[in-house]
Length: 133
Ligand SMILES: [Fe+2]
Image (cartoon, rainbow, N blue to C red; front, side):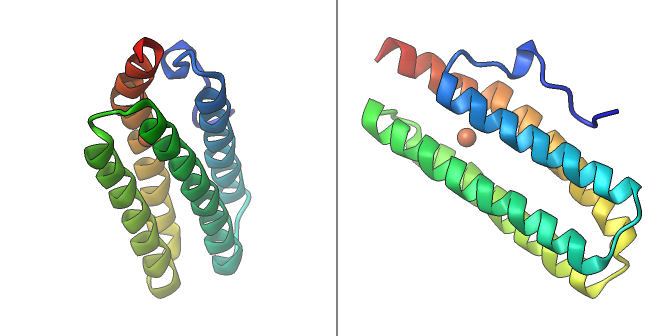
């Protein structure tokens, strides 16, 4: 069973953003599956870094769209992306250093919580703005 289900609350009505968010949800579910199947420390950090690389690409695309639409909250939104990127880097370092099984569960909780909140609040505000401008 997937950890995160794609649902109506996550669908914002912007094809490009929605499909990239769906990819992030798939990647989180893959990571969850990998954790359930037993895993090596290296495989885990590779999967998290892969997810982060895709998130980096997605954030850059979102910020490019925000710039194009003249979104006034671009800087605040960019900070939220930056915090996510820093948190994921900190988790990767912790996995390499510590009891990684426990940290992995924290990573999953963070990823699902952050993505759900960010999409439904911050990204929704932008998409609603983009439709009007
Ligand atoms: Fe965003």
